[in-house]
Structure formats: structure tokens, C-alpha cells
Length: 267
Image (cartoon, rainbow, N blue to C red):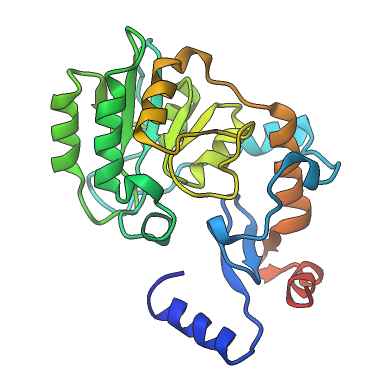
């Protein structure tokens, strides 16, 4: 969605050629393919009533949740270690790759990872007593956020803690919820029945699925009510069922599901 590939796709549209945007999906064994675009530009229906009536079963959800594996780190700052976590409530805030299209195109009001960190620092002051925000850098990011994170940690009086070492999904499981710009980790957190807060643009940034935070004031207010974060499990089950059975293309043993690909090409 950015750079020379975006220019190529815009040229294809201008020439009247069909387009198909493709990337790895948030769930192992699937690929996203969409003529309209990816992420916030995806053709995934907005609204519970438009998702059909085939929710993801509890058994399938639990099996997928049990199979979640954290991304292997590509830098020495980030690890995926098994370690004990504090027995106190926190919201987990996974950072994303700073210059990814998710941030550059769909980052919304926080505008950048540095902006997101600053927003977390301000919002942390509104947390209930005894709560903190637990932040982890993206395992694939080659850009260190140690400077902005240290400044935020100092400004927060201990309410922001940086944990780059502990396994990502261990932190999600131990948390009371996830705060993200628009990471695919939000969808994976649906499998673990965790409340999610989003500050950026995403097709899943809808009330019921997540708690959208369209401004700093909204994020502050959400943190103040962190004990009451909630979601609509039926809405989530319908979205996950739609994604896995109708939208995403299965990818296994080096080949794509041809029928699903043809559906995309002929749409």
C-alpha cells in the first residue's frame, strides 16, 4: 500500500486493469486477497448484521488460540522468553513497525509510533490505582524506540513499563486488555477473549469488536474505565467466522485454495 508497489497499483487502476492486493493474513495458514485493498481499505463488511450467520465455533476458536505462537524476533532488543509476570492488572500495548503502511496510511490521530507512545504516556495517568500499561517493541522492527519509551516511562511515574523480553502472547494472556493502533494482534487477541482498544483505522475498529479511541481524550477516558472494558462476543464470533470461511484464502503445503482465489479474481 506504499512506495513503488502502491504507484504500480495506481497505474494499473488508471489503465483499467483489475487489481488484487495480497499479503499474509493475521492467522497462520491464510492469505489476505482483496481487489479493493488491505487493512482499513479491505472489503470486509462493516457492521454485525452484514457478516452473515456462520460464527466461528467455540471449539475452533479455542484450538486456534492454543496454537498461537509469537513472531520470532529479528533484532536483539526483543525476545520471546517464558518469564513470570506481575500479579497486578495491566493493559498490554504492542508496538508496530514504525514505517509500515498500517502506521503511515492508517495511523490516524497518533500519526506515528512515537506519537502512540506519547499518547500512552498521557493516558497512563488516568488508569485506576494499581494498574499500568505494559509496552513491547515489535519483534521485526529495526528501529529502536528506546528513547521515546524511556521518556514515556519517566513521565508516567511508573505507570508505563517496557517489557521487550517476555513472550508476546504470554503478555496478552496475562493482561486485562490490549491497546494498539491497528495491529493484527488485535484480531489474534479476539481468540483469547481479551478486550481491545484501537486508536487507528482498521476494518475491525468497530464498537462491539473493540473500543475505538478516536482522540487523546477518548483514550484517557477509556484508561480511566479500564476495569470495565468489554466486547460483544457474538459480533466477534461472526467476524472471525466470516474471515476464516469466506474472506481469507487458505494457504497450505505451498498452494492456495484455487476456488477462493477465483472468487476474488471474478468479483
